[in-house]
Amino acid sequence: MRIGLYPGTFDPVTLGHLDIIQRAATLVDRLVIGVAINRDKGPMFDLDERVAMLEEECARITAAEVLVHPFDNLLIDCAHDVGATVIVRGLRAVADFEYEFQMVGMNRALDSSVETVFLMADARRQAIASKLVKEIARLGGDVSKFVSPAVKARLIEKLGERRG
Image 1 (cartoon, rainbow, N blue to C red):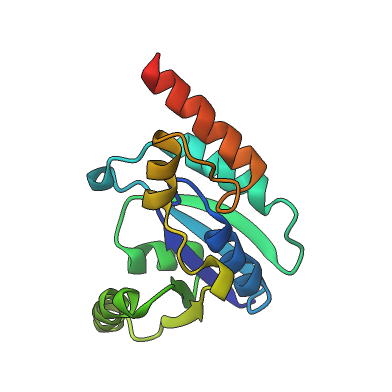
Image 2 (tube, helix red, strand yellow):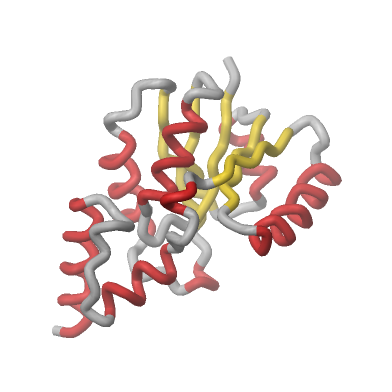
């Protein structure tokens, strides 16, 4: 069984993330979505909320078994934990590649048996970043082009909680 790991913070999950997830699911038998706890980023949504959003959004994917797995350790250790031999990373722009290039080098030094594959974001989704989606929502803009209706509702609810 070929197991892939697609890691990220997913705060929140965007249509860009879902595009990569759907396409990655066609390449493996099981795709594990690794949700990084990453306290340094100060996520808007807590870990349970991010996991729940991903589980809801990925429920319709049938190309592979899709599991959501929170992690708070090295990415390569998470890959070992879930039995992944492939790490899937999405690229939006050249700037992403520089960071990802360094990460691949470090991960290969830690375990050369785990391969990393890059999927380019669909051209219509390349500008989408969770950070920008949150900023647009905070300032009252419409995020419908960037997230699913369910995630949009969660963003609006979360922002209402913060204002109240």
